[in-house]
Length: 292
Image (cartoon, rainbow, N blue to C red; front, side, top):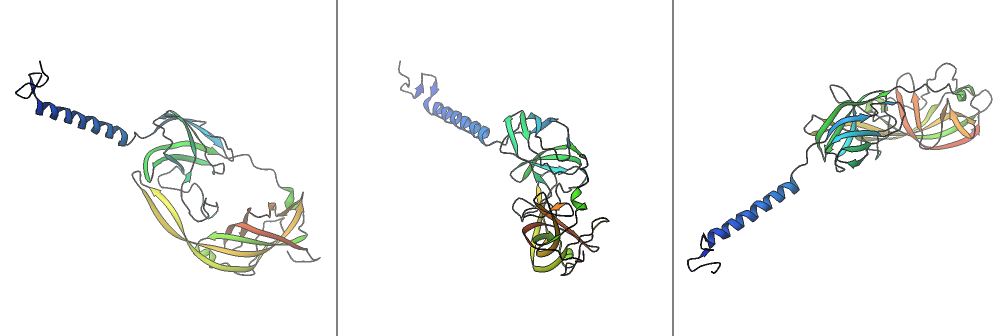
């Protein structure tokens, strides 16, 4: 008996055209199912366990996450808990990754060991408080763990003896400040630092470079999408004359090291600036009777 008889039927039962159509439809169904499995969005991650649930301020240990549907392609951000987005880092205090982009969340690298276990490396300079974990697929938030962990205040450092050492040299310190426009407008040559009692040595501004406008970028999520908000900012280069003392080979000013890359705080009665030291040159010893 032939497979297709003289009437065009397969095995004498099914019309050959109908059989071909069934085969084509079956192939299309298999292809559609395969495409769905390949291109369908994965289920959102679910975090059920965070260990340890609390970190001490300044502690740099990874958090162990337990749950489901962890994928390496997801990005994880840390944000202060609360009813509205709050800064995990103050962009005018903490230097962003590319020195220009300012965001109100902090990305936390993570190592996915399996779909159920991952290690999350949170920054070690988070302020005390409660923090959320936000999971993003590209620019879309796909999951959130509210109040995932807390940061408790760390032990207070012992009083620095460097503040008790009288500054005996003057240093020329080039600093790049990032501040709001209204603060930059108040900065002027001759401004002197306000210091606490027992810290007589005062820094002063000897020159101010060009003010360069910049935009601070804040990312706010409403749970379904990420919104970018631009705020004005100013980068300001200045040179300060800073009284310093040599303590164990380091030039110090009121307990803070004066070296390239360190953060310098300059506060007057009218404003407060923080910036990053670009260069330090210790030029001369202070003259006897030099005013602080």
